[in-house]
Image (cartoon, rainbow, N blue to C red; front, side, top):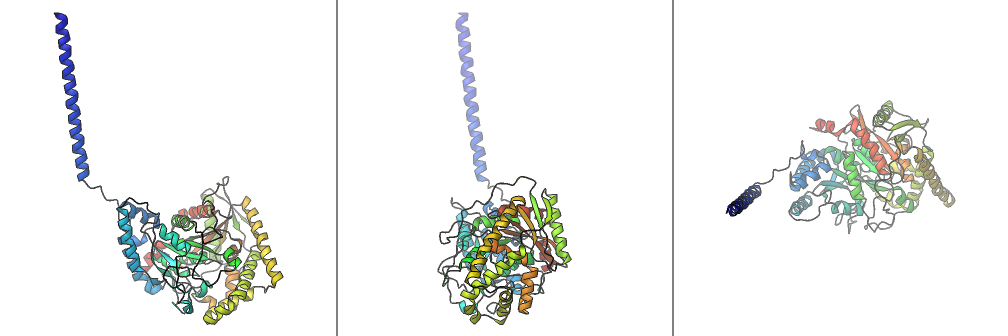
Length: 521
C-alpha cells in the first residue's frame, strides 16, 4: 500500500513538472512573439551622415552614407549641383553641365537600393569626366572648336568602368587644345581658374578636373597624363592623384579617326584626382577593370608583396642645373620627415639620370607628334598653342629613323636602370615642380618660357611618363597661400607602395582643401 502511494505521488509530481514546463514554453513563445511584433513595428534608427556639407564628404564617406540610408543619392547629387552652380561660374572648371542626366541617374540609384541587387563601390556617388575621352552621345572636341562634330559612339573604358561602379557624372571638365599644354585654356571654352588664386594656373592638361574636385564639385575627377597632366594639376590645386603604370587602366576612344602612335600609348595613363588618398586608391581600383578594347591593358594585382621593413625611400637629389625655390626644398624636407616618423627610412640620393630620361621623353613625344599630328593641329589651334608647342619642339632633338630607333632603345635602358634602383629603394620622393606655381597662361608668353617650365620646373614630372612608372602626388603645405605637393614614384605596377607613402604623408600633413573652402566661403 505504501509503495502504491509513493508511485502515485511521483506520477503527480511528474505531471505537475511537465505542466509547468509547457506553461513556461507557451509564455516564452508569447513573449518572443510580442518582442518580434514590437521589433517589426519599430523602424530601425536612420544611420547618421558624416559631418559637414554634403559636397565636402569624401567619395568613401558618400558611398557609405548612401548605402546605409543616411542620405539618398538624389540629395547628394543635388548638393553637388548646387555647389557647382555656386562656384563654377568663377572657375570654368566644368564646361559641359550634365545635371539633368545626373539627377535621372541618382533617382535610378535610389530605386536600386530597394532591390536585392549588387551595388558598385561608387553607387550614387557624383564625379566628373575630362572632356577628352569618349562619353557616349557627346562631342569629344579635346579643347578644339573644329572637333565639336566628333560624337562619341560609346563610352571610353574609364567612363564605362566608373559608371559600372555606380558613379554618377555631374559634368565634363575643361582641357587645353588637344590636351597638349600644362595650362588649361582654349578658344572653345576659355580659361579655367585655380580656386586658390586666379593669378596662378590650375595646371593642365587635367586642370578642369583638378580645379573642380578641389572646389567641391564631385568627389572624384577623372583625368589623364602623358607628360604630367594628372600630377601637375594635383600639385597646383592641392589635391591627391596617382598616375598609374602604363597598362593599368584601359584606354580607347572609338571616335578617334586613327590609332595613337606607339609611344603615345606607352607614355600615357588614365587616372583619378581626389581630395584624399583613400578616394584615389578606391577610384584606381574601379578604373582599372578590364576592357577588351585596349590591347595594352595588363591584369596586374593592385597590391604586391610588402618590402622588408623599414622601407627605404630615396629623396631624389636635385640636379645642379635646376633653379630650385626654397619653399620646394622645405616641402621635400617636411615630407621626408613625415615618412621618417611613419617608419620609413629616407636617404637623399641621386636617382638614375633624370635629365637623360626627360630628354628621351621630349625627343620621343616631339618627333612622334611632328610626324603624325603637327600639320593638322596647327591648322585649327590658337597662337597660344603654337607658342607652347614651339617651346617643347625647340627643346627636342630632331630625329631621323636611326635616331628614332636609338631613342626608343634608350627608353628600355632607362627603365631597366630605374627598376634596378627600386630593388634597394622601393619608393622615390621627388618634387612635382621646383618653382612656385606660375600664372594661368605662362606657357604662352614665349617658346623660351615653355622650355624653361618643362625643362627646369617640371623635369621630375614629365620624365616619369617615358618610363611608364606610377607616380602619386600628395599636398604637403601652403606657401604664401598656394599649395605645394610632392611626388612619390614606385616600380612598375606598384601603385600601392606610392599610395602607402602618400597616405603616411597625408596622415601627418593633413588635407589642405578645408582651408580653401574657408577662403571661398
